[in-house]
Length: 133
Image 1 (cartoon, rainbow, N blue to C red):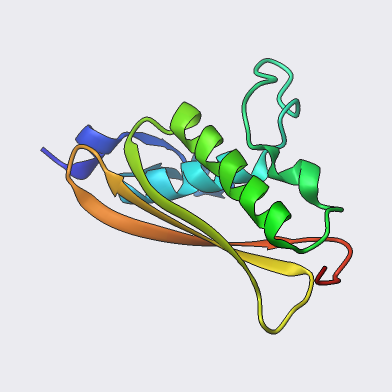
Image 2: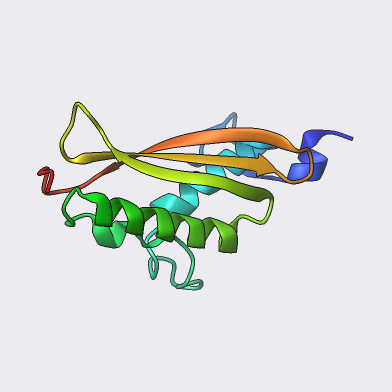
C-alpha cells in the first residue's frame, strides 16, 4: 500500500497539464497543497462552498502587531481543523519578519494522522501597511 492510498490523490495545485493530461498530486504533497489552498482562499470566495477557506485575507490591511498575529493564528487553526482532516495540528506561530516590515512569517507544525509523520510549512503573509505598531 502506498502513501497515496492512505493520504489521497487529487489535482496538483496550481493546475498544470503535461502531454494533454492533468498532473495529479498525491501523498504528503497533496496535504501540503491542501493547506496552501485553504490558507490562500478567502471565505466566501467559492460560490458553491462559501464557508471554505481561511479568514486571514480579512487582515491584509491590519497593523503588523501582536493582536494581528494572534488573530491570524486563530483563523489558521480554525480553518485547518475544519478543512484538513488528515492532519493533527501541533502548533501555529506568526512572527513579524525581521527584514520586511509588512510581512509575517507563519509557521505551521502538524502530524499526518495515518503515518504519524511530523511536518511543517512556512507561509509568508504580507500586510499592506508595512508599519510595525
